[in-house]
Image 1: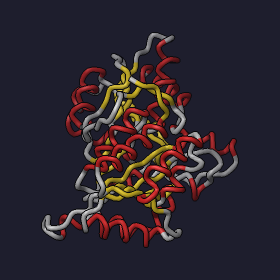
Image 2 (image 1 turned 180 degrees about the vertical axis):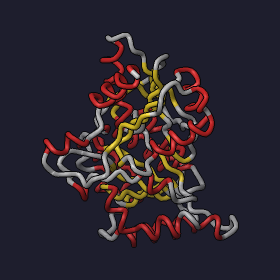
Image 3 (image 1 turned 90 degrees about the vertical axis):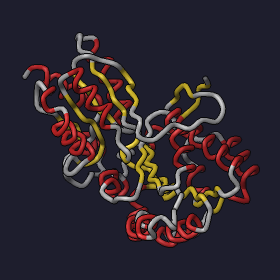
Length: 326
């Protein structure tokens, strides 16, 4: 096992993909690597080795998405970086209506094996236009796989699977995770989609957390453990496909469910998970499920106002305590 950052895990996954498959290319390479926490020597070595397949096109998201989709249909496996997720809204028609539908509308004659990578979540001072968490929007578009890693090992393994997949994949990364260190298997490896991971075992409440909220849930768990409360943290890792069996099995064990995510609570992934549990494991619930998520309001720039609406470990702890007193 090696210790590495989330950002290095992603870079290693890209490096293995570029080395082993000549059809892989990176669109938007410069904006992906520079300024995202990688040491200068790592950046330089990567560009020196793979520079002929690192393409930094002009800033026109709809054109980039269309070009990458066309390349994928013709046999390439592009990794496309949009930077901040709200930039991808400029390419909504291409991603949702063209890329996501290509395989179905061609009766399987065409496929679009590419990855759309973007940064999501409340990064700090991003205000309303640069703090989007669009996972539920993408989950509502059939034809797209949706990945939200939370650890360096998951970032590397899931990205390798995403690049190998014959389906278009949305890969959402939280900028606050990029410097998170973690143990990662040595060498090249791939993590299967649709397999949740229990990040911490517990008996009292199931906490399903995604992306950055996994780290916040782990912090909350340390606080709660001092009070004799043991929460079980389930990280779905992929939203499409979703490991509903693992989530329901955990709820069967604990009898309570809290879902933590950074997106707006309305029509969210949290809402979907709660609905699934209500459909398949309602008999196991000892109390109503709870969401710790963002309220339905544009995000303010001011740090004090931003903190009020940001889901975090403190809010998870408070919600768990309320659930156990009912």
